[in-house]
Length: 128
Image 1 (tube, rainbow, N blue to C red):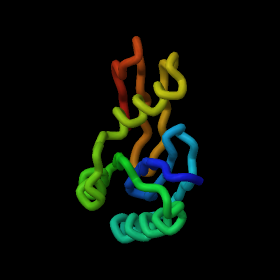
Image 2: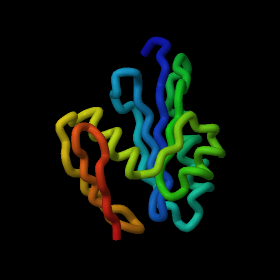
Image 3: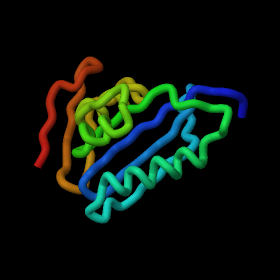
Image 4: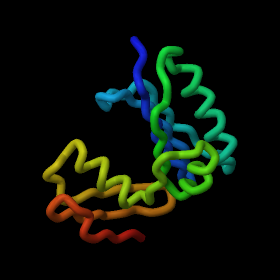
């Protein structure tokens, strides 16, 4: 792989820490699902180290986004460019790949969500 900008996504939740590394074409280069074991920040640090080790040396991380219940702390820890709540993150991600989507269901470790999209915008949501 030649020199490329890569992008890192973090989802720090109550049950797991999820990391994904993508290239400029949205191709997934690395993804990790790690159980928090009650230590989300320590597990995030381990995940970041694993991502770093898997990166081609000629590549750089050009942007980082964080979401999940631990998004603020994780975002501060890695100096994230974007920190968004799960509703916004899900809506933006789904619309990127499925522009006509109208409904998103998400089953998380702490709660479940339904997100309604109208005219390309999150219009309503509910969670338990």
